[in-house]
Length: 275
Image (cartoon, rainbow, N blue to C red; front, side, top):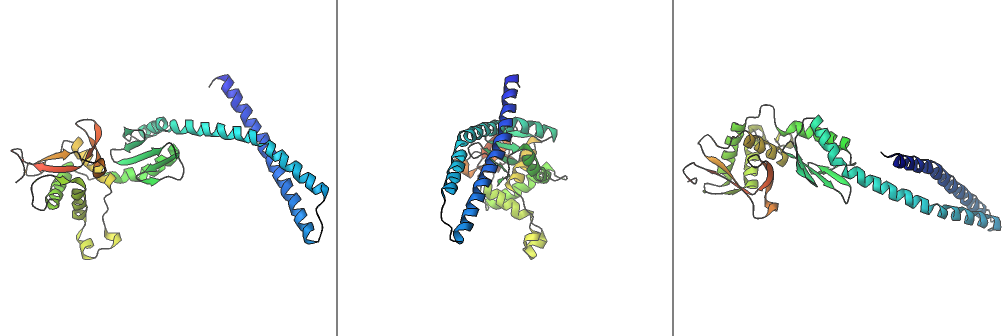
């Protein structure tokens, strides 16, 4: 930081330390003055010239602080904007420290190929996995990410098994018809297939095995990264973009080293379309 900037910052901090206590004292003095007047009013005392003069002078002094407080407000606004814009750079460092992959671009990022991180510059907010954080800082983001990253992919995850389950969910979702199936129909079938017998015998919340869209995205991306793109029958997975991005799942495409919307999926035999 240049010496001139450092000097200005120290001067501004000193001004704050002097101004704010002065404002506090003046507000307290006006408050006490009004309390005494209200107490006198209950006993039948009338307004006095001294009271009105003290009140006017106190209020005038408060008004005189407005330009200085306005300057402080603008400085804090500028500082907040700089901190927000520097957030991504700090976040990249934090992700490297935690050995997390960070993809995407402003204002939407993806951590470890699954968890969405959205930054709203206008509102100065951050959302992790669809949940808005109370504060916007790298520490708050990392704290929110840690449990979600741990749950993205289980330790016993096997890409081939995942792809086989995905193919089975696809077959169920297409109801015996050949062709492409909306990705969220397959996702729904995949979640239903993941439930154990306990859930289907007594469908309570505690027995439900959840699978968030972030987890599904991360596991699909892992399978694609490991080139597990076929099921046990040799059918190959095809990913088709949606007509409307709202109908798609934003998923990492290893072959293109980028994220793209997947709207429909299809498993096809090497000879041609699934019968």
